[in-house]
Amino acid sequence: MNIEKLCSGIRLQQEIKTEILRYSQTEDFQKILPIAGGLKNMETEAGARSALRQLPGQDKKQIKMLTCMLACAADLYSWYEQKGISDTIYWDTMGCFTRFIEECRERTGEYAFDREWWTARQVSGRLFRIGELEYERKHIKAGQNSLQLSQSGACGNKRKQTKDRPVISVHIPSDAVFDPVSCDKSIDRSRQFFAEYFPEWKKADYICNSWLLSPELKKLLPEGSHILDFQSRFQIQKTDDSDREFIRWVFQTESSSISDFPENSTLQKNIKRHLLNGGTIGSGYGVLGR
Image (tube, rainbow, N blue to C red; front, side, top):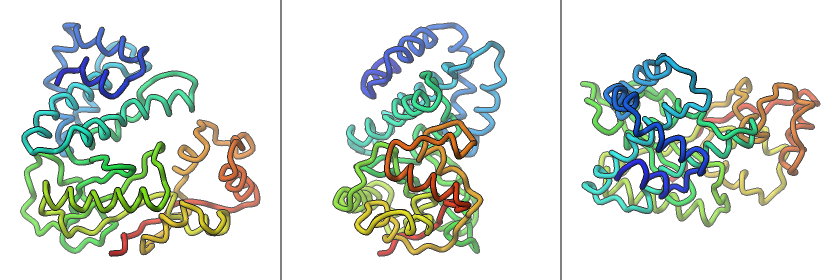
């Protein structure tokens, strides 16, 4: 796999694809590839990102960082092949780059890459999209509960000498078809996937940390809501009223002023009214019921 084939396979926006391919042919890119290699391991990715951000030259769209991420994603294809993981899962997983760039355009009006803090999960072989949902391999240390997650568990990591317990963190892509049947199929397929390719995670707990698990949503959504159906699958262990990440996902805005939030959907209207009346949304943390 090479960067050009990857860009085509994930249908990367042409404007960004052109810039990526141009930069990937430069001497500057070849020089920073050793640094970019650190993105492939969750124990070193933070340092690699920090080093890449400090490189000289303006890069408002983060083309350099994106090119490095895509190079790592292309390299990972051979690992998928060796393990026998399907091309469908590979392309669906790496399609996150195209989705994130589109989400950035929706928020800011410009195609750019602003999710470099997240995508090391995909390029390290730690997170997979299986059907409509994403699943991330993690470990929790001995003595921790399911919500105190460690950073270990990435492809190629050296395991710590502790009795770590594997867990699977569930993520909901913004373009997911979120009906109960689709969620059931995804979860069932993921259980088969981990049993076959990562047996250590065969019996792992599935956990989720998301605004979609906020109990406040029960006040705002009607019976039969797909969001409430998804939420009901989890045993909620903890809530965080101060978490404001839901603003990014619900309203796709950079504004911090509630009065400026869009009202293009019933969900947006209900949540905006709830916030203006002094309510909160926050997030919830839960474990998937068996």
